[in-house]
Length: 272
Image (cartoon, rainbow, N blue to C red; front, top):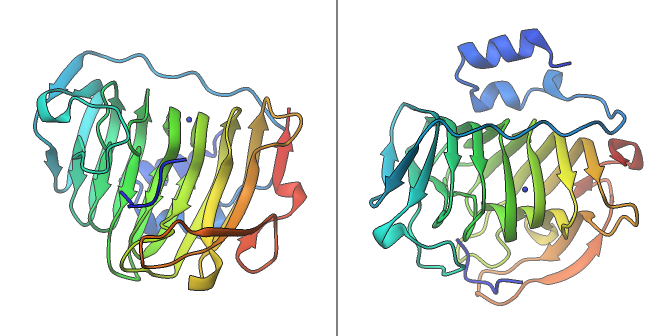
């Protein structure tokens, strides 16, 4: 969470390896998993929930937690899907934890918090509350891996990157959103952050795929992005900001590829 104002044919070898490794972040950041840009295609269907589980107290995860595609939704103190900055998450993942096969329903509270390196595998947010997931590790070597899954109805951000390290989003889909990924623009503690978004379906309406702080050394790489329903190309692929650590609203300073902060070319995105 942030204090600034509030303004969704697979390679068998890759999938087999990811399954065996619980989709470790280290595996996902290798260049071999970068898919080349291709033509836009149909977006995969959302899964059907296999039961529902109310969550009144944040579920803490160490190791691996398999939700078996049940729907988890907040109740009691977690029974909100608004934009309050004081909400607690439905799940909090300790360093190295894996959360997989989970559907987060409504209310979603503040989704998922990762306190260090983590993997979110096949996690779906039916209606994003404050943020779908917030990445909060403090180590430069932290890797946050999002593999598969999707999110929709995010009035602002889907993934909030507050901590240090690298965030990799692969095989994901998002629709009706503000920003898919935002590097914190005004956190008290700032870091250089690395973001890779690869093999992802983006469905309008939306405002921006990635927002990064150029002055703190952030980088955002986009590969094989398929954009649906945005024929006028209103969704900004990558927006640069001047971040701060004072809590003020960060200033937008540019958008589009620049080879340094926003790393992609026109060929890395397709539209239908």
